[in-house]
Image (cartoon, rainbow, N blue to C red; front, side):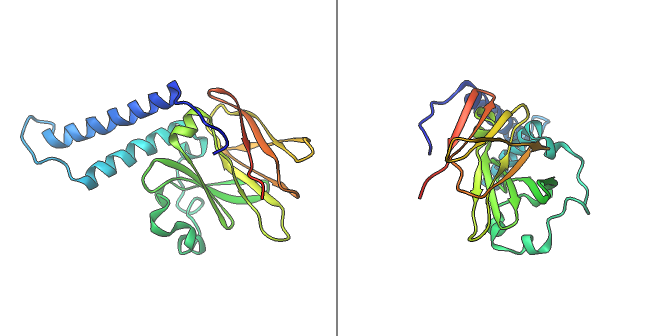
Length: 209
């Protein structure tokens, strides 16, 4: 964690919205929509309804997820589907949308439990919780390989603006968002990422080794 944050009105609103959606689903499941008595929904049903509510929130705030899905364009490649990044149901692959940024093909999707929005890049998976997405607008991920530039990437909510990468010498470099996704390469380990999110000015300081 870069810094301690108090719970904001936006975070609270999201929790209330998700709880309300889940309560409505459980009520309909229990009453059958016709006043009849049914057994209480199973834990699996509750998790499924919570995931569905989370996916709906993600679609409302991330541009790529609102685009109609193409089975050919948006399908994750077999090498990714069968690789370690998506083990244990990390993603809801049916929600995956392919975007292009900085010449690379990447995918944006909801997590398997619907509570995060994730970006899949070559060799990397970065996820942002729905609470952070609505409160801060985004949380960056970074990936570095020996002999290659550092890749700073992630999902940005609608309305996030003025994203800048801050280098160690305090130079700044603008970051472009495409369909709610951003990716920028840095030859040296970056210092921070700054942006304007739903709650105002935000910054993320990358850990130093």
